[in-house]
Length: 122
Image (cartoon, rainbow, N blue to C red; front, side, top):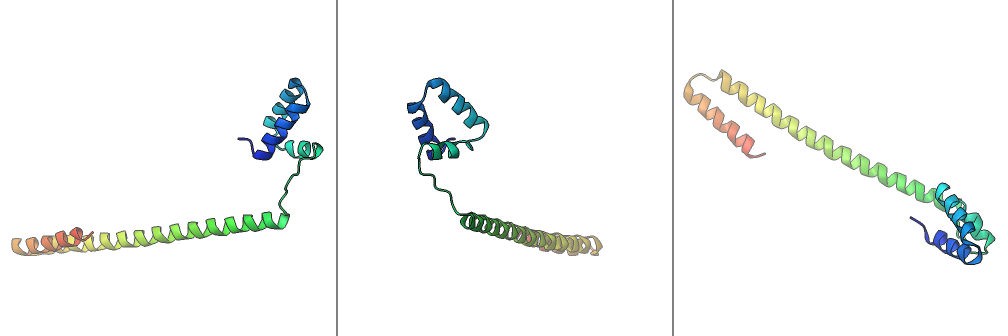
């Protein structure tokens, strides 16, 4: 994609030069990913807005802090979900042990019913 400054500069360059020169400039622009356009724009008296280094640093810092915060929130959600699943597995394990150690058919059915209630709440 070509930015507005690059597009404007290339169109002005095309108006003022031959198509062969324009083809070479377009090739250089595509190879250099548009870095040559700034110098060309200054040579053609197009006003170029360069952000100050402090504003660039501020944007980078803000982006870094936001992404770090989002990563931390995602990690906390994952840990909370893992803890919840671990508790469910622990309860299920206890109920299975109780069913296995229960004496008599009636007690096993009662404990299996409580297991069904616990798993239904998930």
